[in-house]
Length: 99
Image (cartoon, rainbow, N blue to C red; front, side, top):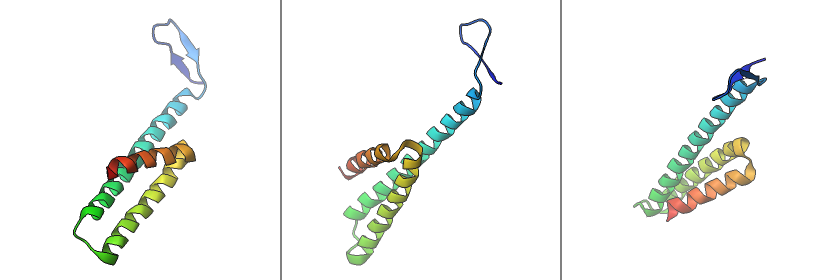
């Protein structure tokens, strides 16, 4: 059993597994931040592809690869925060990147 010393309290309060939960939460937040950063990078690349000088199939392939990566990262993000939340996050990032 692990213990947590209460801030501003005298003594210890038993909290089984508390440190593991906190570590998991921190890892989860770090993973979410990493995935958001990767999604943002891909969306920015898509935006540059839309406004760049590339033409035809090369431009389409470039943008398609970025969209595929965003989908991959969205799936990983959904494992961390849930499908609906992941969809909302990616949608809001997409709108911000395209504007």
